[in-house]
Length: 88
Image (spheres, rainbow, N blue to C red):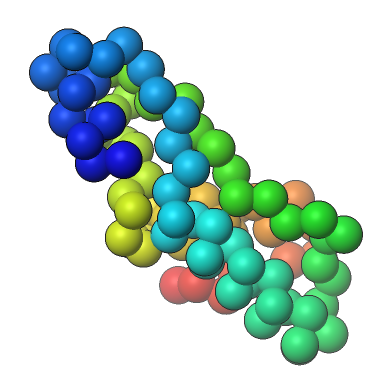
């Protein structure tokens, strides 16, 4: 959460796990878009989780969809093989 990221930056929290709502939403949309267009979709689609510490807090995925959110989801789907990114 934004509060968790602030606490890490302030040294009040050593780590947290990010399960950004934006990543979950974009993952679901990407899977649906691919399915409707006849593309390969995994049996299960997970919203990636990221460990956030003081070393990587500035790269944390925002709760609001951003370029880093779209890249994280495209990277997840890239593991399927024949893959075309849908977010540019």
